[in-house]
Length: 519
Ligand code: PEP
Ligand code: MG
Image 1 (tube, protein in one colour):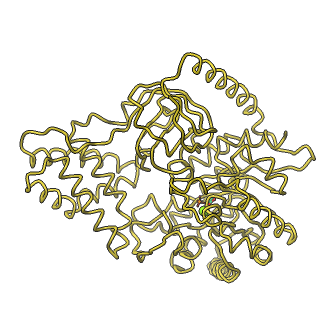
Image 2: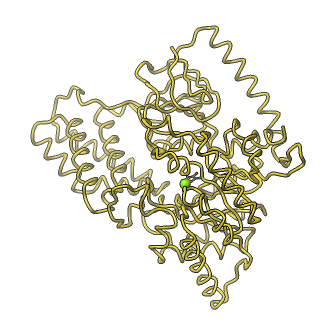
Image 3: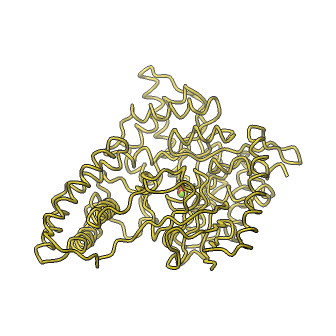
């Protein structure tokens, strides 16, 4: 049987490891309140241990301890509901209340509530499931994967992800891409059972379930071919990517933490073309101070070993929330206060971040990049804030790179249309096709039902890319691309043809994108 979905890239074969859905009809006899108390204590102990390693679990622990959740569960238990059903009902109640409230903190915690409730349900079902049971080479099959799933699983044991929900540019897919794990999302997983052999072709967005011997043989031949060509390509990863016409094209990598910067350098990246700072903010329980940010950015600069590090200022809003910030409820968060708009509205967050980046710039080449810029006025305001930070540092006697380069992401139609004017005020562009595609096509990047429109290689998006590059080149500035399209080997020739000057891709894609440029 072959099932279809939307794929990222790569081939993988392995046995299905199912992340189970927990069902309400689990048979239960005994003292429901005592069973819940036992599950609560066990989950509490697990989370306490996990919280020492990752801040995200400290947030889950806080949510578990929140009386709103436990009181709701106890109320359902009081109505003689079985414990798993009570947890699920309480979960829906709390999430429903949180989604409807004006309290941004609560709304941002919906995913945490769901995560904590899934843990309680699993404990109540005898904790038959843990990621630790996964064998090496597993294909993880799930209705949906949450960021905490990827944080908890040993990614070295994962050969692929196959999920029903999610999108190619979701957070989980971006993490998988950074680990070189192929993903197929939007598939009907109902015909897959634990241990089934799965052949995952993420290029084609196809999964063969329980293949015939012939299908197995053909796939193994493709895997061998891919492995040997990748092996060869990998050997040349540190060599520059020079086109046949003799133009040297830097191939940078995208990263969100120091570990990813280190992997990028090992993969042969010519630098970091996109350092997503929101992960520094999201994995914390409170706003990271200027000095904590400075240390993180400095360590990232040092890990780049003299190669450039492009630090993108906070790109919060849309689907990325800061649980500890009281952000007003928005009807259309992707059209709301996100990226540079959020930073300009919060100088108390923007200034310490810019100061931290400037301070890190003495440790190696750093570039600053502003996300979601729509207008020249926004860019002018951001530059004014940067100038103010430079002045403060100068007055305080703190050194920084006075010639630090500043660029912007081009990820909205307005920015494409105004690219000629924006190019007068900055030294580089980086095209963010993940967002540009959703805004050009008016198709949510996370919504599987409009994914037929969400195509970064479609003509409207390609024309927007071409217009941006032309405007930038007329103004004499360079253009990189850091959206997922840059990693797509089917797009390399087109992007070079349009005049793209640099690529910024998921680390595992660096050697093959370099090789493709050389062809
Ligand atoms: C993009 O929009 O293409 C991009 C790189 O930014 P992000 O995926 O972080 O929104
Ligand atoms: Mg973006």
